[in-house]
Image 1 (cartoon, rainbow, N blue to C red):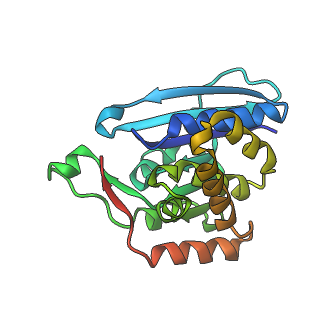
Image 2 (cartoon, one colour):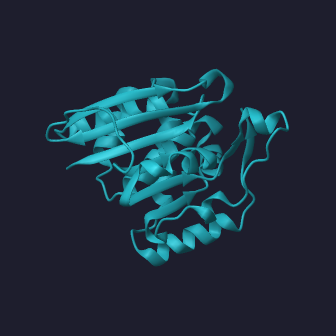
Length: 215
């Protein structure tokens, strides 16, 4: 299996932990894995990007423009920002959360509207997940990243068992049960890989107000 994944979000959303969980899961499945981190101004809510590459033999940890099989986006604006890195036919999985960057907080700019609607990929290749709501159901708003991991596993048609094992190996014991719940909620949010099901999920998400937050 060759798989290039970009995990994009802002500081504090758990992109780095996510990359560690995915890396551990793919290694358990016998793949060569390389993980690299690109830190933005995380302390100010700036972009944080991590790359996870999985193959029989990975030669470079970096993912260039047009090379990502999947963009796992924890925030809508970050999904749009990194879209040029998605390969033709690649998939993008987006949390509905919106976090205001500094220019929006200061009033210099407005947060773009209808970002998910404007992302130009086939509808069967994009799913928006109400990860903030599912994270709250799991017990913590900080569990959005693990909700998205669960959704990713189902979205990409991967076996969930090594990812559950990777959670056990990576997450501290006192947070494990909550994160296991978050994973299952995200996994179950993706009903199947059929185009009509994807469209139903998108329509359901679009009918709700986005989750807003400040950096």
